[in-house]
Structures are given as C-alpha cells and as structure tokens.
Length: 324
Ligand code: AVJ
Image 1 (cartoon, helix red, strand yellow):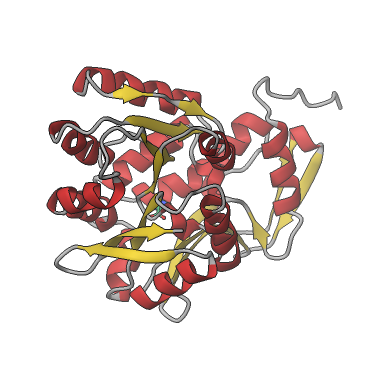
Image 2: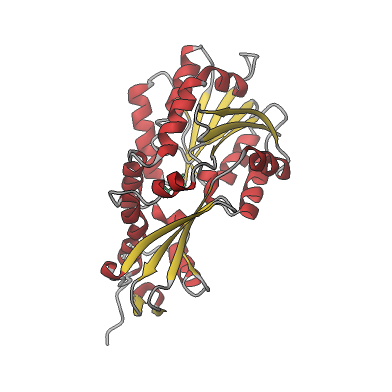
C-alpha cells in the first residue's frame, strides 16, 4: 500500500488536537474548529434561523440600550484616547449599532477588531469602510490575550467587547481563567462588555440547537467534512448524526456527533485509525446558559465587578458591563 498523501492544507494544531481528542474517553473535538469557511457560512445561517434567538435578541437589546451602554464604556473626558476592542468580531452586525452611536455622538475613538482569522478581519474592515467611512479602525490579527497585552502598553481608555455568548463555549474553570486573563492587563477605568445567554424554557434552548431545517446539524457535521479535507480522514457522513441536549442543572447545552454503527475511521495526516462503536459519541460543543447570580459569581471569581446589567424584555439574553 502506498503512503497516504497529506492534504496541502494540513494544520499541525488541528492534527494534534484530533489525535488527542479522539484518543480520549469520551472522544471530544473542540467547537473552536467549527469555523472554517463553510462552518462560518453555516453559522451565519444559524443566526437567521427562527429558533436561534440569541443573535436577534442581543441585536435588539443593544439597539434599545445603545446610549446607556456606550456611556458606560466611554470615558467622560474627550481628550483621552479611547480604544474599543472587540474579540471575535465576526460580521460586526451587532457592534455596528454601538459604533454608529459613538460616531453620531461625536466620540473620538478607535475600533480594534481582533480575530485569529485574517479573512474574517478583511471582510469586516471592507464592510466598515463602506458603511462607516469615518470610523478609525486598527484591525488586529492575533489571539485575544496577545491583543490585550499589546493594547495595555498604549495610553488611553479601553473597552473590551466579547459579545454573542461566545463565553458560553468555555467550561466553568476555563471561563474563569479566560476572564482573569482579560481582566489582568486592564486599568481601573477600563471596561468589559460581555454577552451571556440566559437560562429559560429548556425546550426553547434545545430547539435553538436542534433546528427544524437541520442547519445546526449541518454545522456540527461540517467538522467531519473539515477533517476529511484537511487531514485526509474518511468519515462517512451517512453514518453520523447530530445530537444535542440541554441540562437545566448545569445550564449546559451539549452537542455530539453520534456514530450510528460500528466503524473505523482512517486519518491520513496522523497515519492512525480510530474505532467507533455503534452509538458512541464525539462531544463537540458546550454552550452554557447563565443566571444573573451565576454571572455575578463568575465575575467575582475573575476579580471583576458587575457594573451594569442590560437585558431584553423577555430576559433571554444579557450584555453585562464589568469593571476591574
Ligand atoms: C457562536 C458560541 C455563540 O453557542 O450559541 C450555535 C455557536 N453552536 N449553534 C452558540 C452555536 C450551535 C454559538 N456561539
């Protein structure tokens, strides 16, 4: 047998992650790897689904409270430089509400979108030049921690945005550690604005992650397509299913890829094969839902103080202003 050829795009990080994740019990893969080009497009479709309430809820709550939120973030003194950093900006649709309001009220500030994907940043910068041509933008392609450390060295006030309930993907211990890392380089007058999805009717939460059109299923299964393409794996998509459940005790939505029969999967880039039993799962995502109490506790554990708590009329979602 000839040696399997490695796909040109094989990434050492992804390969290492898959080797570790599929050797574990239970098998796991990180939701971080959902977002290749196809996955990012599927996530755009998820945000437009009738069942997926978080995006449109946060959009409307930012619209309603734009004045109070921007006031809580910006310095009173106009001479002081002001940087609005956003971690994982995506298409920036929600942030543009705040950016537009700041421009309209004459704030002198610089928007610093941070993302590890150069393609995501390029798309965002192009749309900002088009829609908000007077906005000062300093895009940064790097990981979040590096961006914050760099910014800490610059004089001026910083507000750091982490919207969309991305915080929900962390396990509790990792969430604390992440918030601590964000808080560490901040000064007393700096602020964080973090989006948290709130606990609600369990059926409604479950439906948001198991939509009737199967877009979320396609999003989860796309991870296997990505491994086939980038690592030369041979996952047969006909024998995998999307499954998700919500646990109201922990507040976690957990998503899985379910093997519907005994099967072996070869991963060429690892020169390794993995055995799956019928109905064995790969755990692919956690998406935590919060209560106000849990948010306050999480903030306190990271050495942060909840300054203001903005929510929508239904109490579905919260954008929270945190201070060091
Ligand atoms: C991008 C992490 C906020 O957890 O709601 C959507 C990702 N996963 N549907 C979320 C996701 C399945 C989403 N976040």
